[in-house]
Image (cartoon, rainbow, N blue to C red; front, side, top):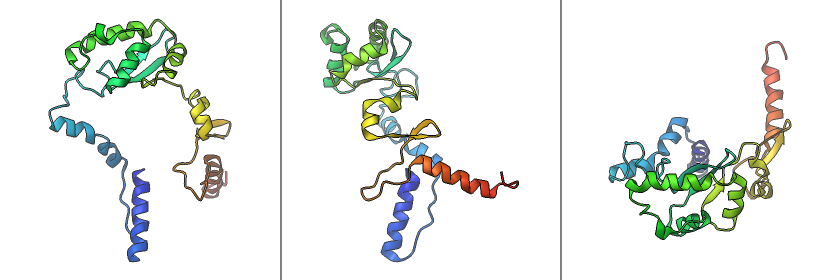
Length: 200
């Protein structure tokens, strides 16, 4: 994505001034920029290097994954109060019976309560419960399951490439469909065959 933004910026500069730009992009730049939120929280005293104390690192009982009865998982991201209330309701619990979720001293106890609840049903059973609640609780899908999810199917988010589902081209532009990965893969194989020393 960072490379794409850089290319677009260079094209804009070319159109504006008639002179292009050298695009210097590295994966390390993208990875470091993903830490911006945590770094700002650390600067504000809201992020700790101590494990088990942070909101978004799997420590908070309302922002992590839980194993279900069938060994599969659900992901919980119930940060806002409205979603947390629905999350607890979906588990068959009452928020009034639970300790303050914002106090990290209560996180271990709450995690154990939620672990016990999720262990009582399969992932898909919990999926049905939370489909109707809008509680920021979703099943964790395997690579094979993800392309079959109704939202992925409706969006045509995956295409077949050599008998395997691969992500469709992104981003999508209004006036052009873009090249689908199978076509790109076929063209790449053709070009690479030309470069092979033995012609194979």
